[in-house]
Image (cartoon, rainbow, N blue to C red; front, side, top):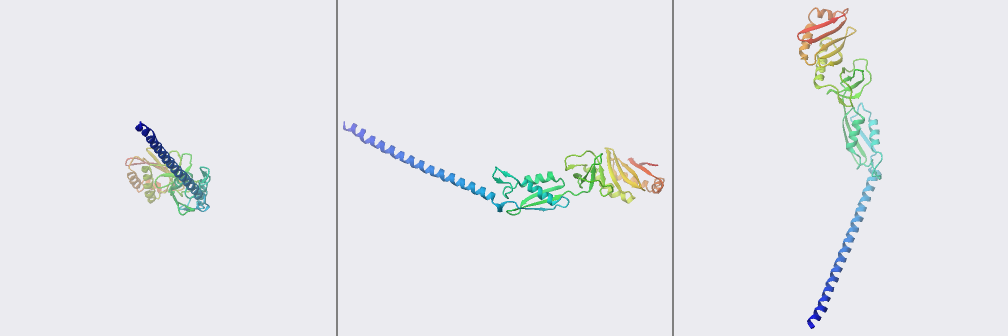
Length: 285
């Protein structure tokens, strides 16, 4: 009897004490967790607000754009275009003009699309308010033209990079070949450019100054030049050895009857055809 009463009274009380202790422990842990959560949220808000204020700080906005390396392209136009890329906000409150948010790679890509003359573009943060735009430009060596005489500046690698005004003289050798594409584009092949370069370097020694190169087909290149005030042509086969064809031409212009006619101002040369092995076909009016 006593033992049952003891168990009912003492053991039940001990269970209640344990339950109270566990409840107090859970309540304490919950309060500690709540405080950590609150502190974490407050810290995150402070960090977020601080970051926004830092990004929006007037002293940390792009105020100066330096353009280096532009000679033909107008540095003022480049500066104006970059400024246009820095207008507006990201996520409604973050200004694109912030030195931290200035999209370097996007600006580089946009500049190349807007100014095809630019061969390379590199955008750097010079300080907390200055962007440095370093560019190199394609160098015009030739004019590449379509059959409709729409011409483009072309560099030494055969890349057409910008539209060109009409040139009536021979400021640039003109190469006619194919159709235009989105600038910049590969206008001629490396083999074609090598052939043009060779002819430009070798023909002047014969008193022939090439003005235009017309790639008519895979087997015909017409080279226009001025002969005693009249337009004449040299005709080559691009698939044949150009050096051999030039040697045949050199020999022919030093041997009569071609040599005599070529030097006779009363003779109007129409063409000299060098597409046949070791043989020259020519016509005078």
